[in-house]
Length: 365
Image 1 (cartoon, one colour):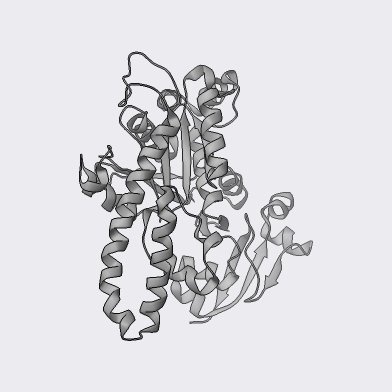
Image 2 (tube, one colour):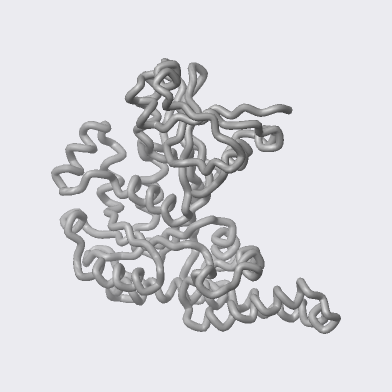
């Protein structure tokens, strides 16, 4: 399952946002209930209205969305890389996630004291990035020491790893996240990905604003967006306070409330979509009388790889995939009608799965 870690300095709204995430309607799905794996971990459904439209068409009562595991990573203060606060726990948890959501305070509130005495979102971002970079550099230093003997013996893999880690160490001197695809050649990328460094993970800055600034943003948000643009990151403007209020509203009430605020979707929905975009993920669907279910794969995945997400045997014994686009299926109203219109296709091993494809895999065990 996809995992996203929520980080931030004290008093930026991180805990409020996490509590809203894990108490949201998406986390209370009848078929994929929110479950607390640890006190700071929650599973949240990925919103996808297509599943409920298909539910009525195929006449099933079971809908299983794909899901994201959110981890509320505690303990980050200045000096976390040296074990300050809950630094060691923080660093261990963040190495295990696929993407980082960094909550940044973009609101003024005299009743909520900022840890450094003033609101400065760029300072906050750079404090966190510096701690991650320092911890990564310390990790690299230890690994380089261990590799030295193997490098001297002429071990090719050790030489490659030493070269990649040395370059990463140099890049970390800027104390910012690194897009490894910009800096490494194809044969080096796998080694870089396997480094488990925190600063190579995709990052989203969640600009936490007051209710009045949700639709328009503010000067703080503008600074975060400029920083993110220069560092290849994404920004989602969110109000943790509003997200917490939405939890107690019905779906219709929540939509009306958001409309009054000048936005269409909740910040949680926009944040989940941003994670999918950042990680280059796409969704295909299986739909029948038993259930309608969403599955997540990397964009560009071929049909056998997608089949393997359902079961490894499906990938091994893949024959072909019966594919109908979501749009064609809904317009036709059924599989039979889609086939009669020639809208259902049989695709082979080289077919690249498209977002919203309804797929039935044929395989031989």
